Image (cartoon, rainbow, N blue to C red; front, side, top):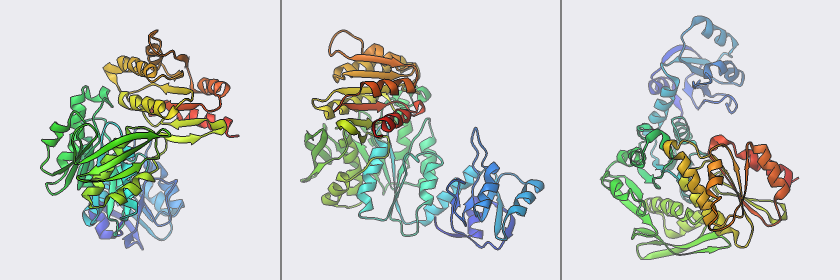
Length: 470
């Protein structure tokens, strides 16, 4: 974080000074007592099931230099002040989250960094990871960790930037209208990327058109002298194109674009392609499964080109990119068993691509798909789960394991007599699925594990790891 004088900090968070003893400068802030460091100022955020004010004492015990508070109660404050060291500052704010976001905006305006915002129904985290890999070798770069992509995660990422940070890469998620707009008002992006539009969060928005409208809030926020990166193969391309006066860099595979992938092939199940920009091209060999990751690589490369990096730098960054955990993460187990850990989230589109990736990567190996509920689909939920079952058959999966009430429809969709025979097992809980897998996995199997985040499919990954690796 950029250090601030006490007066500057008060101005940034729109706060009122309640108490100060020997504090002139705020060097850093924290919202988590588990990671707070001595000298940090604690910001107590509130949620549906917690109130950060209950952890102020713990923050002070760990060396916090002060805290924000939404409460102005003498007994409350006097008790906390009595427990603190000689150095302490207490600042009253109306809303701790809003002050946290205002602080991030204040810092963003002082930074000379170029800010990239990335959104999309699928692929935004992987695109962020690939772009970060490219930029890290060429610029001082800060990027969203994991999926720090919401009203808390985006400010956290911005506040990690320092005076000499050159690039900030932000993943931007949403579950409704105006949420991305709120993030852009904090981030002020110079680049806006939309990877694609699908049926993620259909329950909340009700139509793919509304989802596209919500995603478009990102590119509408990019100034005329900024750059918008768009997927030429996405059916919403023309709509997005009409919403911006910024320079547009297009990418794609099927439709003529500025940035294209050509001569695509799989080498040991991993995508290889010519990354082409205008008349120049370079061969890229990705180290992650899934032909769909070519789109993510193209999007990341298009942003890098907008930053005037050359094709060699783009290739080198893409080839060594490591994706965030639980995004088609390749886990090597004993007996040549491979687990594709794609358990972070699931939607109809991402299920389709993950099953294709399993089929592409398998070769002659036996294919096992461990699939769970896809959530937040509303009225299209039952149909979507049935369709995923059809995709299991179409991709010639040998064994399907489902967990969850909704996932029973995946099993039902895979039961059709026509096409590839699938051995199907449905379980009511994760432990039963783990026990079945441990008993039935054979050497050289390749296993996909995927469900919506709330299904906690990391339990399956952990269970397999503990039994197979020990």
